[in-house]
Length: 326
Ligand code: ACO
Image (cartoon, rainbow, N blue to C red; front, top):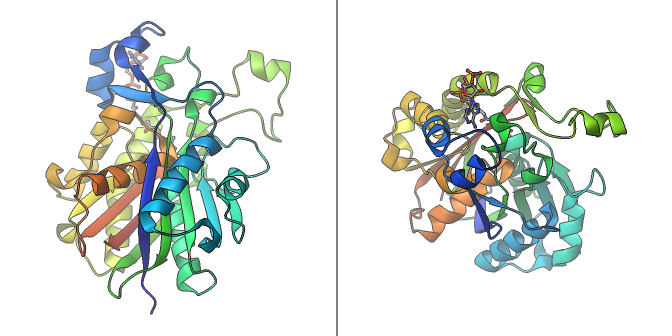
């Protein structure tokens, strides 16, 4: 059976940093509250006019360079996002055009913060099946544009950024070994953008009621995340015939340090084996896992043959875990 994995990584965050102290001037909050409840200190915010496809293109070009793959070799582009440039065309089509991936199919994937791992699941299986040789997957968000900057319950949590990976055939025994993707749509109401779609099209009323922004029931999402992360991670590991103790690096979705600590505890994994950068970027949703992977690679933590476990959860509600040998 063909072994399929990640050939190259790239990431990008906008230059502008918004600190907790900056937020103290915008809403009634404090650096202490945000750090204690979330672990977040900074987040990066897109510049005026900078959209999800712009960040995606930079991350994608870096991933292609890292993989040594040309845009023409890419046969599939997937962009995982909840903050696309437009409802249509897809952000993936905008990226396909701008990077010159003229031989690629392209589509967006909507699975909230699980989107990058979902995309890795889809792309790796399409390459494994022989349909495509190389794919480009991107997790990218400009959540700052759909943030209610008057709602302290949400505006302190999120940040903007993008991460990308080139997918293709790897040496035998390496690459994707186990996948667990899942959903529970009954929890969709806990994290959503009420207006702007066919249910509640844009109108003066929806704008006045701030229904185009993220609405979240933080406690419900928190409870969901705590109970699902250990379960989905163990399911993906079991499919690969592995145990939590075999994992060299856990890369969890970066939403909240308390959620990450709890997942590590449930998997009985020491924090030295867990990648944490939520302090620097906040929750960048679909971009969080590829940005973390990109950093881990830059810092030499990803060793050939090492076992890496990606675990995400998010809007949908959805969850996602993939085990890879690097
Ligand atoms: N600053 C100060 N006080 C605040 C702030 C803030 N930024 N935000 C909320 N509070 C207040 C609340 O109003 C509440 O006050 P009250 O008791 O007077 O009503 C108090 O702090 C406690 O609020 P809780 O919601 O109980 O705080 P909790 O410890 O649960 O933390 C948090 C809230 C951080 C949102 C947590 O629930 C969480 O992280 N949830 C998960 C969110 C998440 O991961 N979302 C993303 C999912 S991924 C995706 O797909 C995008």
